[in-house]
Length: 139
Image (cartoon, rainbow, N blue to C red; front, side, top):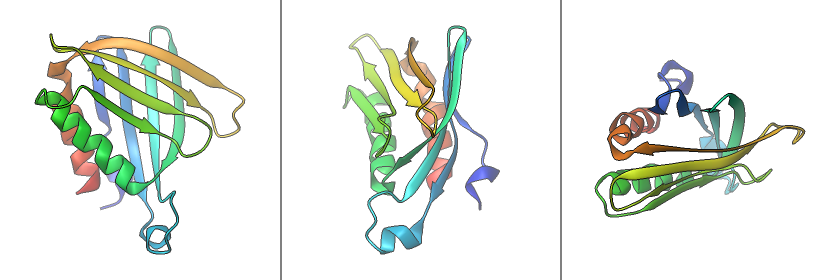
């Protein structure tokens, strides 16, 4: 199934959200050994600001991010980060011992002319649908 046929994976809390809308995995690039072989399309709304941008990364890095989120939900891990190989875009989630999650990041557009630096807080209960949506994209 094409990645765009999946619904977005959303981490939503009130009006704020981090959504991964599509994932493109490029097997041919991975087989050739290219480190950047996946593209993730991110949509963020934090307060009154929002952004939509792509994030190029390694397929394994994306899989590791999903695994970190699962471990975070189980209190086995307290941080999960997905970073772009270029431009410096990233999203990071940090869990405290009470189940609160700080979501923060920096997202650049493709030309690096625009940038959104964001942060919002959510809780652990928002992770299962986000993780499930991401697992659907990579299965």
